[in-house]
Image 1 (cartoon, helix red, strand yellow):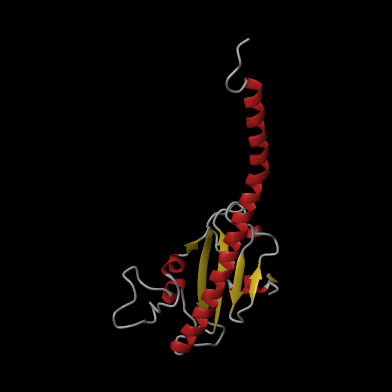
Image 2 (tube, helix red, strand yellow; image 1 turned 45 degrees about the vertical axis):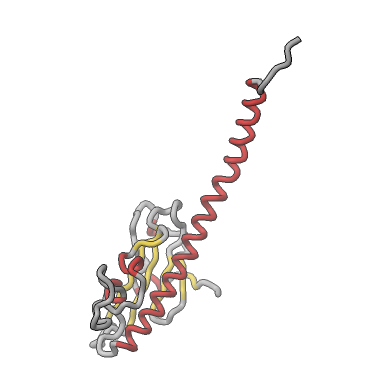
Length: 180
């Protein structure tokens, strides 16, 4: 009788089935881990914007908070040789100035309250670029520096890739505070 070399078809099918079962269990966990990492990065980026806004208003008291996200960043060519300016304060990374990082869209807007001549309030927002793929919650912060998240798990961002709806002062006030 001749001894068989290699594996039988049944043995190979069993091994493939086991690998598929393990993959079916592992892939959703991997996706959830990626979403959690993206959300953590978004929260850290919102904190960076908060710090930049406070620095900006201290540096340029006649303007108040930065009018737009781009004012906090730097031009593609880098910070001007003459130093930071009101429209290129060089306070946040160029990636955040563009507005898309780790699957989240960012925006920062300074606004004037009624009767004010300077931007005396701001709102920073972060929304998932692709809901349920890059993130499931939107984050925001306003002039008080408190981080908040959308309690509707991205409600206004569902089906709206690239939305940055959290970057309004009034909307952010209605969100749930992140316990730190």
